Image 1 (cartoon, rainbow, N blue to C red):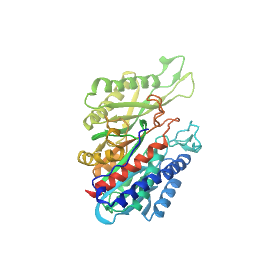
Image 2: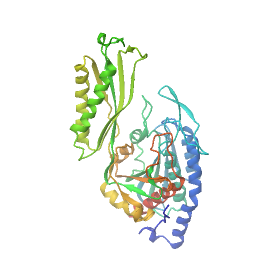
Image 3: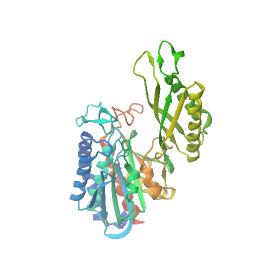
Image 4: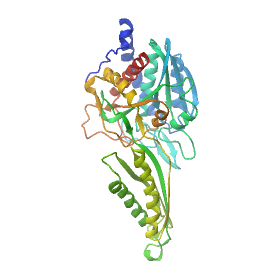
Length: 425
């Protein structure tokens, strides 16, 4: 791993030499705590809107630092308010805190063995997307800044639940936080978030101005056929076969109707349910999937063509089908001016050679709801071990997902640098 130094920003140059050294020492000293917190959260993951113990530990830590704390925000969210020594702007730093219904397959000493229920099925629970690192990093930033308050303004720490989506029938996540006024009292001028990546080398940062992560929509398709014996399909209408035709048709929207040189777009069917026995053609089938888009005009066309195509394909095979498409998450958009302003902070924290411009990703983030209301900046933090080959990392949302603890301290450095630079301008 390349050695990383916290370089001194223009604003930090206004600090005394003693204050500069103290800040850097406090950041170095916090690393062991950040790793310890991350291991705790990894061993004790909780699903969306159920992050009760997670929120309790976060609140206890913030309170111990003398930070003003609000709990129960958007069900299980925690907010911390830290004022600098002078009045000034307000910057919000956000970390998501929920885990996923994934059974961990790693052999870590802090492996998750938690069990829960998700959509009526028993499942393991795992921080398979790195939110445990996000919590630990922001807790570390809170402690460092509480000991170094020589900035003009206020830092609002947002520990957000349910980024992965609230359970069916519930509200949650960033959208509910915004609805409940998290960007007010005090009014936030800018919001910054990060996401660790198992695919990026630890010690590096990646970013993109403008649209950086896709809009995400959930859709459901219900196909109605006619049940019959599996040996005599001509006696009924096969909804499974019709579902296959619909899936095939939906992919032609992407491959033949979307201008993919403009922006990427994806339609994926992730769930298909039908039938109870091998020799019975069932009455109905259900499909659930996701739509990803990085351009709102393309999104409108995708939605319209899916709504036209699904019932038309079903009718061609003597079946009926309906489709519902949720509004979903907006595009995660990095404010262009704010990106330009904070890019030097990332380079000061990581070094010029370790900050890389990337293409947009079709992953999605409900950080987008914050960035719709105030200027936002979202960047990616490396979490891949330098000993891991380029093609041997495990993707997010998988049982083998792995993050190198050594990648987290740069997240603390970057957030801290951003706070001093932004509030110093």
